[in-house]
Image (cartoon, rainbow, N blue to C red; front, side, top):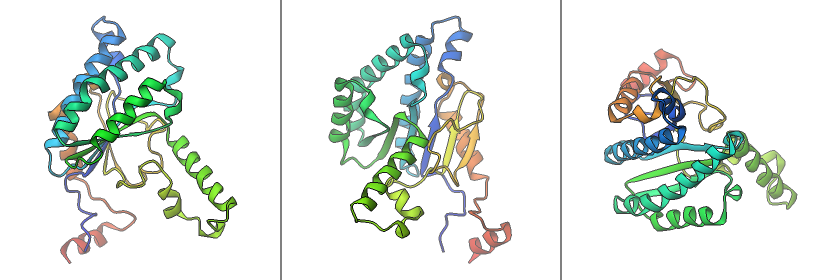
Length: 249
């Protein structure tokens, strides 16, 4: 009997890393300082997940499709920081057997950044310790929309019957089709919304919200979230009584 109803340690963790700007403002520092501090938190959490034998996938929401609305100076800073971080971290990820993946619409990024993203994926594609997914210029609605476009093209070409379109077919055309849906979703910074992140994939994910700002989120913070996750019963539409029976069968 499948043990998916038992909240063991999460295999796939997805995180919205919120609060960099507020962290800096609380210290009367430029927002840029908060973003740099946030990169240090990314390193800590990646290290934790890479060392956790139960964690196979870590997905981080780095830049949403809505983040382009921020001041141009901040967007430029984020792009430069993204590029600098890739240049400094790809070799480290590879050395630690971590596979790097990107999801989102890359066409909005400059050619140099797109090339660096491609190089990172190619260099680490055969690594097996942890899959690190970076959502960059990503939106859940965009993900579903691009899947629908691809499916409609297949229908128009006669490769697929409209009657054959179901949840499985749609899922096969999403960005993370080859990976399991997140078990645990975490958002730092005190906000309690998903902000257009992985709308399809979060259907049965357990949510965990914390007021801790991302630069202060550390390994103990993540362990607290995992401990909370383990206390939950995942029903997937069943009753609690059914789950108890399945767990003992």
